[in-house]
Amino acid sequence: MSSADPNIEQFRHLVAGALDHLESRRQEINDLNVFPVADGDTGDNMALTLQSVVDELDVVLAEGVSLDDLGRDELVRRLARAALLGARGNSGVILSQLIRGATEELVARPGELISPPLIAAALAGAAHRGYDSVRQPVEGTVLTVIREMAGAAAHAVAQLAPRDLGTPVDEDEQAIALAAVLGEAIAAGQRALDEGPELLAALKEAGVVDAGGFGLLVMFAGVIRTLRKGQPGEDFDIRHYDAARLEQVSHESETYRFCTNFAVIGEDLDAPRARRQLAEIGDSIIVVVGDEQTLKIHVHTDEPDRAMGLFDGVGEVSRVDVADMDAQVAAHAAAHASDDGAHAAEDAAPSDGGAVGPHVRTALVAVVSGVGIAALLRSVGAVVLDGGPTMNPSTADLLGAIERAASDEVVLLPNNGNVLMAAERAAELADKRVVVVPTRSQQAGVAIAVGHEPDASADENAAALTELHDELTTAGVAPAARDDAQGRFVVGDAVGYVADELVAWGDPADVLRTVLACAAEDRELLTVLTADDTPVDDDALPALVPDGVEIELAAGGQPSWWWLVAAE
Image (tube, rainbow, N blue to C red; front, top):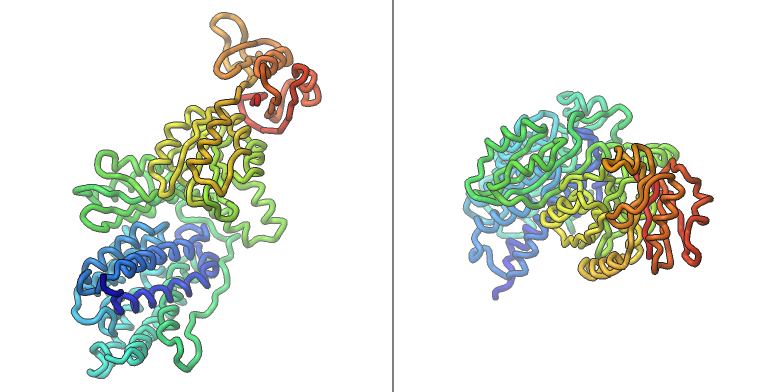
């Protein structure tokens, strides 16, 4: 195997320089993010997209092939595909198209991989692709910035002396020539960025420039800094901007909640048809053709499952990423509020697992319904997803929680029989290893969660938790929702179950005593989760437990059930 090609190594060096500088100012980019949604993730999404390109370049370099052997068109195809599949959100998808447009120009022109004319052509290709990728292009955004950069680069190349139009033999001369062209392009992009608020009311209202356009300039500043490294002179950079006035911002897609991203792999994919169908259920639509077998979809919608379902029988859906924009906007605003305000926002935020802890090998993700149950599971390190009063999260909801978990793998607790199928589907679609432990009740999920080991694999954890689950007896007492056809109870009476079997009905205290006795048979510990408003005080519960059995009470706050019981 031959050594890595120096042209590819040089290109990787420049892209990595762009990524490093983007990472250094990622939060500043997030803080400017108000359009189309003030969710504070533009810097994150751009960094993830560019990281995908660097990762693919590392794979190519590890293969040790020369550029001639690999072929420029194959290199560009791989990089464009990596950017597309790694893209998230509006900003990430648009950036992937700028990368694709730029790399397509690099393929189309002979000569070395990087030269001043190629840079100008690449920026023009990026601008063209960027505008084509968006259903309704908006001026004042990153699209305006890249267009003005392309024009300035072309003008700068036209001013070069003939000897500078080719690829300089000397590496230092090449770096100087490239930096000069990019410097002119960035200066034009900076002017376009500063004029953006006059073109887009949402920016002016929040007192900011476009986050995506700013991020693009930061990336190219990173390229110039890399080119100039070791040369005399001041560091090249983009000036700082104040964060958005978030208290004055509402996102444009107010009628839609979920930012939905996914890829479709198939044959004869029809992008125009997909755009038309998605327009019926959402907005902020970007449908990008990666190649003849790949589409990348971005849409804001209330029905992520329906959006993905449009491709049933047409192609395989993968790379799913669903974000709750309402929760993101609230979290972004809270991060910029006072300490008291931030705590209040955190308390009010939905328990969707958005705030995760440090990265672990395997995360535990659990579906919950009840503030107390959510708190109990969080206390043992779980990422929780609020399933609502009916415990009925969508596949997209589950995927969002899985992807937000800071881990390589996930063990998923559905905690309700009705969630099992959606959980299994989410496990199939996720980009990381996910194992579903088929918990059918919340009390079971709480009881076995303590056995989760973050440093173990998902398979090892699933085996351990399944063993704990199989040794449990679960029970519960609830108010009857309807009259019994056999006349045993009426609406409002207590009904008690052990597993799925009705064992008692009538007076709440009597029913609970019977249920606890049945569940406690051959058991040592009863964990009882209580609702917010029960007909028997917690202080009276220990007297209802059989002798010799320990009871642990916890406020679950669950709907529908007065008491949920797990016997160990």
